[in-house]
Length: 247
Image (tube, rainbow, N blue to C red; front, side):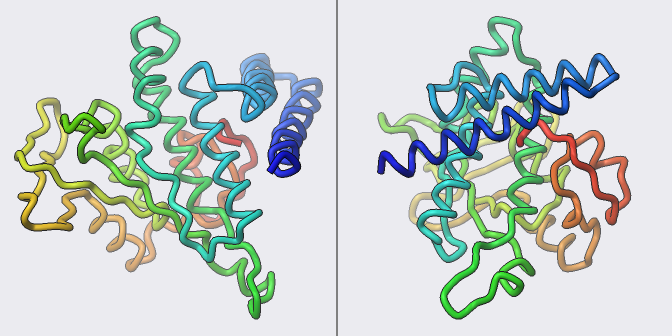
């Protein structure tokens, strides 16, 4: 376990070193500052607890990569209840002014691109070339109940649903946990209602639109390796870009 943990920390440090190397050669001040921030984040996590939303998202991704690489989970490792885990960092950032909703949305969009473009690891009887033809599947659970039985839906739940609907990617899969009460979104956006507890499992997320868009073949983000969402939305589907916040 210690060997694996040290390896994952070193893996993050290598990303930090690369970001610092790129920053040293970067002429654009804005991009240079972003690269330095990426390096700072990668030196912080997963070696230490995340302090803000960006670090928490990056921590999530590094750990996901570590588990799928080490355990070779046959395409079924699901990182869990993203809205529950990230909400304290999201709420704190909004309250202290270090994070905006738009910044959080872009970081989540970057994370979604990384999930969608992560090739499955080679498996017994399956070559590396064959594994690279499909993504490493994952599922994100949203909503449901908290440990004390109270409603688990929060502002970040709706933001993630917005990301799902806007990005329209095949991975990660999204599932909403049911609660006994019906729920309607108060702000602008699609209503989200939960099925009765007796009808379980029932899921009321925009997953259908993502699946339909994948079936239609539009859009096709597979060539994108690591891109800020704003760049990805402007880029043709076949264009490769290399800059990313969610490294």
